[in-house]
Length: 262
Image (cartoon, rainbow, N blue to C red; front, top):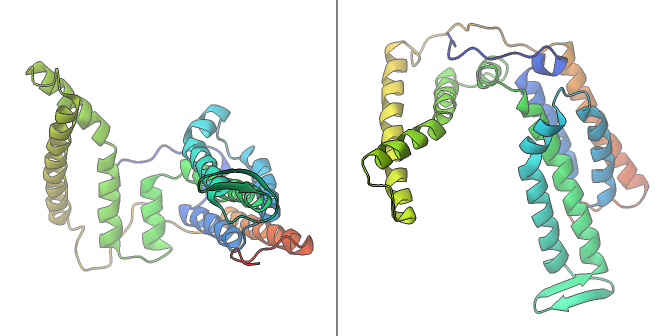
């Protein structure tokens, strides 16, 4: 039975939606936006998503912190396209290989919006996902092999201990007087020590799980039932609506650019 660290559950509807539904919703929106590089479809999708973010139960501060990698990735992707994208139209700035033209500006804006429209909902949806609930959904709803799912769950649970182990190793090495100088050498040695510790802990966990029958080739039982309900259907329907509306508006306005083609 999956009894590894019971999750802390929220009171909002978003916390009760099956993680599989959140995965499907993110994939639907992402698949629709990946088909075209245009700013219209991404803008429409992002506008719908911005409204839904208000009901996601995620505070502004937490939203900014958790989605910061998406914003950074979108910015650098847009700058790269702006400078080195396919040149077309009037050239505004040119230095060596960098050439800012009307076409590269349009592609840059489309790339920025598309990365945000795909990445932000995925991050927001999975902020409220507990690893145990996700494993239950994979095994019971998607029917993935339970041995693989439980092994991955155990690994995810141990991953959270890395930072604590790193701090413990750092304090232990400083107490012995071997971490006062040489930052690069200290980092390499400490990283190797953490690798050895992680391998040992993983081996112990694998042995313990095997001894408790987690690898048995029989139909297993589960501590919690994972199934899809009306809220899950509503979330998937909303994602289909967002994807369909974004594509329809883009096609209707003539901005649809299938897979970056002409």
